[in-house]
Image (cartoon, rainbow, N blue to C red; front, side):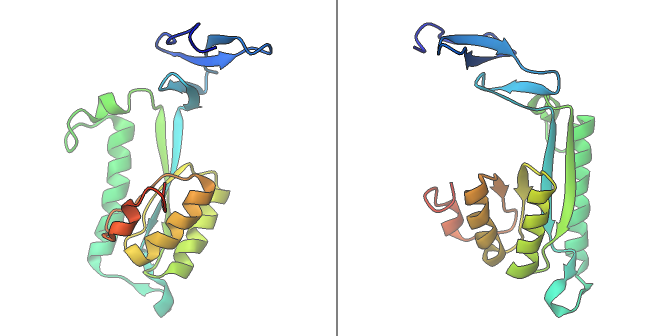
Length: 170
């Protein structure tokens, strides 16, 4: 009966005892409350699926824009971890409960196959969310896998309207 407890105090999450009675508890030390309904890790692990090489063409170097994109992503992680508000005003407040953001870069090339391999690697590594891939044609198969694994995804260059379809990609 959730009417017994209308809302837990800040820092506590709703739980139920062995008899089904609702209550509020503190999260373990390595976790923090999220929306007063669950405990989430203080260290967020994300995977960055980005074109590092032109994988299908034998791994040749990519255009400087792709290298710059990867550097920008790593700089964004640094800004989150150091609470730097220079680019995103108020960033420090947005990530106040987060101890650290760990981001690993995975090579997507520009085609589905290396991107899917990268997705499998990041899932095996325990990443909890992903940023990428660059192209819609590459993001769509990854989003299908992410749907199965309940992996949040943000595709930074993808422009296909179908990726916004909540039924296909919740």
